[in-house]
Image 1 (cartoon, helix red, strand yellow):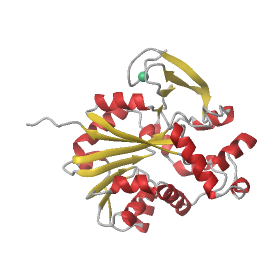
Image 2 (cartoon, helix red, strand yellow):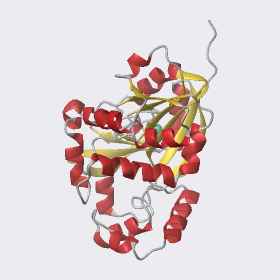
Image 3 (cartoon, helix red, strand yellow):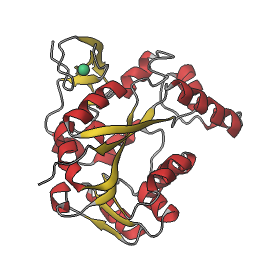
Image 4 (cartoon, protein in one colour):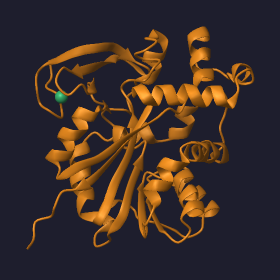
Length: 298
Ligand SMILES: [Zn+2]
């Protein structure tokens, strides 16, 4: 059995055989730091991300335009407004890596109109869409082209789990963070209620896919941060899909339009359910905010 890619222990066991888009890929779990990782890791990433949205369409129950995708993203930032607004406080410059359809940049423009916005996005369709719907966002081709710039917030939302080499990413980003700046990443939480609390085999299969190499835990992120010259500032838990979606999955065991269930539940019920998941840290998403440790002088 392979060693854990983060803590390097060989105490690794098989968590699941076969994933959403590959029967030959297994999910392994580290007995020490708790993180999960795919075996084997995907090769040929470039092919994988070609026509990304067309491929992702098989995961949605209806077709989504770029506007739909951006609006859905903004709904999330508004739902957790307090958390994201706090992240934007007193920031003069923000770099978002993998800005997607630009939902967070639009949210940032509303909440902190004076903040300078920079972004990196490798998908051309996304870049064009952001440039036509948002003014004043400056794009860099990649991290190497940001050299010499300092940012008060570097954000990667739904990005880190897609990186095969998270350590090299963290090390490359570190010099770009200003004195009091932070790096904020949102990543899928291992303790997704449909995977653990309800232990739904159909959802388990749906949740693990080739593009998510790793499923991190607090422990593994503490270790990773230390290895790369950071210290964890805090973790924040968020639940994206609420009770309506969970009831639908439990009843129908597949992705579907669950608005029939949503219409019978009050927004308060959905909100309370999410708060319960957050209290237990059994959510589908969490955020890690880390800071570079004191820099060497000279
Ligand atoms: Zn480990």
